[in-house]
Amino acid sequence: MNDKRTNVSGEVTCSDIDEPLESAAPCPGYPPSLGESRLLSEDELRASLDCTLQQWDGKSDIWLFGYGSLIWNPGLPTVENVRSRVHGYHRGLYLWSRVNRGTPEQPGLVLALDRGGSCAGVAFRLAAEGVMPHMEALWRREMPMGSYRPAWLPCVLADGRRVSALAFVMRREAATYTGKLGEDTVRTVFGCASGRYGTTLDYVRRTVEALRESGMPDRALERLLARCAQTPAQE
Image (cartoon, rainbow, N blue to C red; front, top):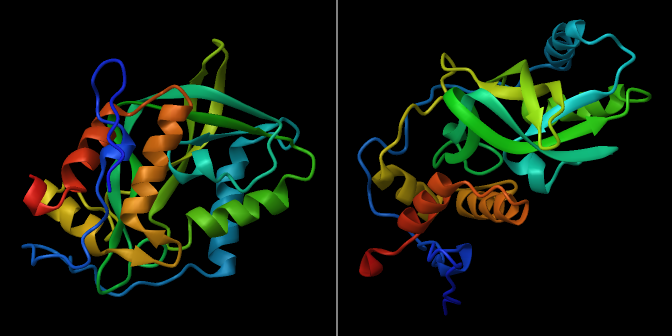
């Protein structure tokens, strides 16, 4: 049963979205041909982390920009969480997930930053003292296959401060980059993709809810969720 609600502007909220399909109809282009996958070794992860931290002075606190699951599940001890925005990048379902939100046979989708526009998110400040074990854990979480490019982005905090925040940007040359997907493909993924941490649909729903609760709703992502989580009988 749906708990239908609208906000004061008449926009659809997450409670209007139906449950995922038990099975998905065939969709041209899905599943994608992604080739063989390989996890980065511990040495490769460490080299990537060390390269990224060359731009850090080793003494200042580190700012981390969260735009997806980091908002509702940072998994890191933070001393400050602030609404923020980066310019030059926008949030979208641009990354195929073969482990966390899907499988090699039925890849799921997760969010990534891609070029253009701007993106609202949460900036997390990590204390410099004792930060390295947390950064190593973050790298294992976000960089297992090297699909992202770690980057220090200019970030404007809600109170007007400007900081350089670490963010994970989509590598367009990666085999897991989706490009622009049609809604039929997104609907198919919402209906069938599930991985180690659950379904793609749940991941998107939780992100939409977290953004709205934080006072920075992503209207485009909400509209995509509302359209693509519906069953054919309700379209």
